[in-house]
Length: 509
Image (cartoon, rainbow, N blue to C red; front, top):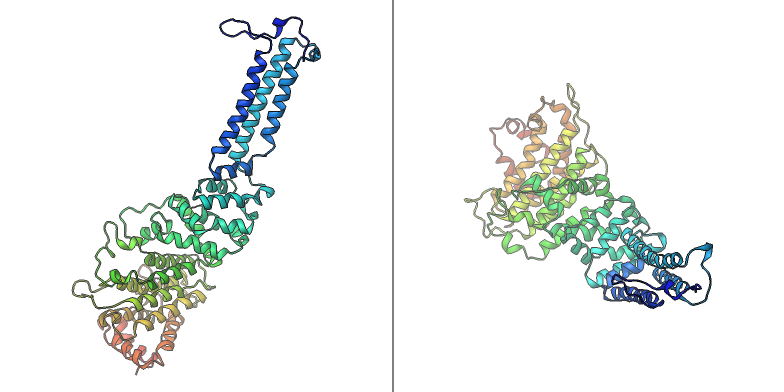
């Protein structure tokens, strides 16, 4: 384009010093431009579908074509023989250099901008509407690393996620794949109640995540249960996992709003109903209740579901919450199903009298967990003053009492699900608790000054009333209850002083 005073003015001298024609630089540059475009097309063509969707989502489609056209225009301006003098009195050499450098910098800047916007992965409102295509491609291809990257980059923006996209995001296949890779991104998303409320089907999303956490070996639920109750010598609950659990399962507001109790209960009942545990769990298994090494209960979805619910209810009590239904009855539902599957055909109580089989271990744990929750509820209702003052049972405590007495009624059923000895021992746990409330509360407050029994009358009467209501019309179970009362240890002060009172209250005299 520029007028040349001499042919040599636009000649490029290379390292060997040989002079080339005035258009050599033009040919080389156009070849480089075409090579650049070809490389871009080839790279896009060989990319996996998920990567192509990601690039198409975040990189403006006009950016690179516009940069190529503009660079091409700069080269035309530089090399076309139009005979125009350079502007601003620039020298021919400087003008050519500037146009060449500008075309190069333009392409590099465009490519860098593309990389930056792709790496930033910011989901604007318009891109949010198209992200479903990325999720769908990932689901079809079974490649979810890009999905996790995009979610993490936009964690605080996902309240605007379209319902159809969120449905794909919480597909069980995607949840399982990311969890197995060590990612808890789905639980992290659900930990935000504002995001949870935006989902088209929040309970379906919670169901998919909770079910997966019960069966994967790297689940934080498994780790927190092991850390609290044993079953593995080396629990490793990281600060991140601990924080995440405190925002979810151990957060009463989240636990109640998400209805996480439902998949915990239903998944355990479904696992039991499938029958696949019956043969192993009705036989002796010393590894199931092992306290050293890795026990088989550490990966038992039924055990994990029960203990997770217990920890969630414990968190409710520890926070001083007394009102609201936190679905304590889920423990009873699983207890009833275990009892139906249990058989005493292979029990050998001479070798292992406390819980001869894994099914017996699960029944035993539900009863003692309910005892622990009941004692905790009483302690949390008691002021640390002199003398102590005990508040009356709230709604949470009443649900615990109903659940415990219901489990006691269930196990009092005649049959061969459990042995007579096991049945009696499980019923006596509740009877001893009531009698301790009646006359010896120091058994419930081992580290405090004795609480006057008069302060615990409302709690005692709650459990007695619930137990009486369950048994009053069932003569067969009443006989089992009488046998359990007669078998109490009369060497204990609370039994000696309270037996007659208890029989009278339960209308057994």
